[in-house]
Image (tube, rainbow, N blue to C red; front, side, top):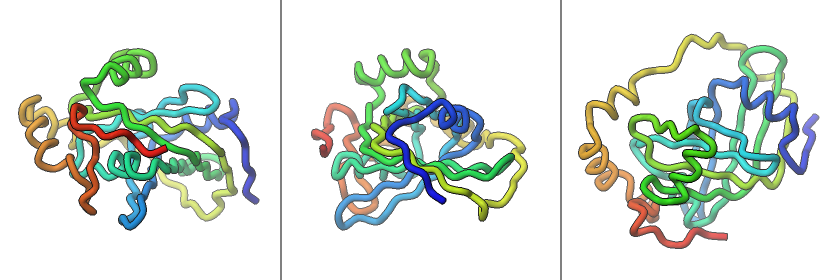
Length: 191
């Protein structure tokens, strides 16, 4: 049975901090739905109504485009170990682009100023509802380790290579929506 909460409680925070993976889902009118797995080590609970994750350079930048066009974002976490549970955080997101003052402030406050190689932006979700459900159908998995592939790829690119890659691959979504990257070209996000 699903239960809904107005904010992130201590039991929710504890669950979030034990996970190894989370998923983001976003869309904009007329766009494809984007669903992405993320390393839960990048996710931080900022307070009872906000979470943020440090997003690294990837093959696309759909979430950023959807935040500008629509703003709706859902984060889902599943218990793959221990008692079953699924948690969804529903709300509206914004993107703080690397190189901006807002990014630097949030990096310092939530991530101890530590920026992984390839960091591109920080996505902040203003949580409007927390929903938990049983998770009985989620299989059990054993966590082995993080994949080093993305970090190795980013290190091999170097800062100039990452900048060139982002300009070539991360400025528009697969549906042609602007992502707001680079920061100096960012339009105002949807409310």
